[in-house]
Image (cartoon, rainbow, N blue to C red; front, side):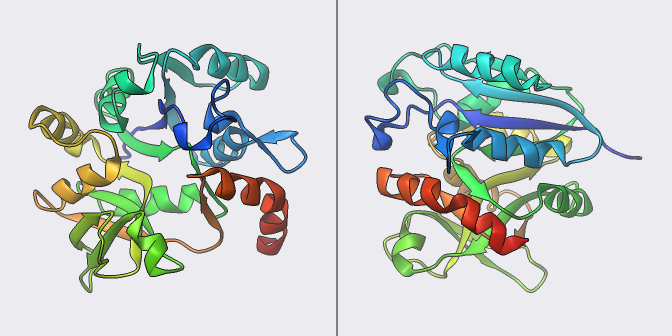
Length: 255
């Protein structure tokens, strides 16, 4: 029997590392290239290519919620914008608590595709969803090879067995055990959703999903799907300016 699928877009951060650009604008609504396309436009196009979606929720903080609601109206996007009620970086809930807010808004029996909105990539979300479905009832995460040890230090680093199961995950390690890193792209089956609340209630670090992944691989099987193509994590002003200037060139290389 086919499972229903909802998408959760995590956009509750304040983008403090991208100030002054993000003092009045969320990271996901920054422009790409000539400015006609925004970061969220590209992400949403990938979401729309996934067949048979049940629903979609974007979680924002209170400061930027109206901007996301305006984007939704302008794009006529079929998603719900949810305000997490926080108004400052000091009061932020963190990605995993925001995910809990979103999970309360989607079907209780739905599998969930979770996406961070500060990642740009050219590979197919629909293909990742098919992989995630094939590994149910276990969760799956998108992976890629970091370009350097330094880049790996800024990510969640994982190790896999021959079947693709994650046997270890370490968030932002000083000495990465491999160059394989996890992205904020998760397929969480309905049967695994309770793990999110379990992690938060146990006092897990709710700021970054990588800490949840580090914990989850110790509780049950988690599988990794290696991505290809371009991927950019918009984590600094330098990275954003480089991506914004060259994103359309990246796309042409994939065509």
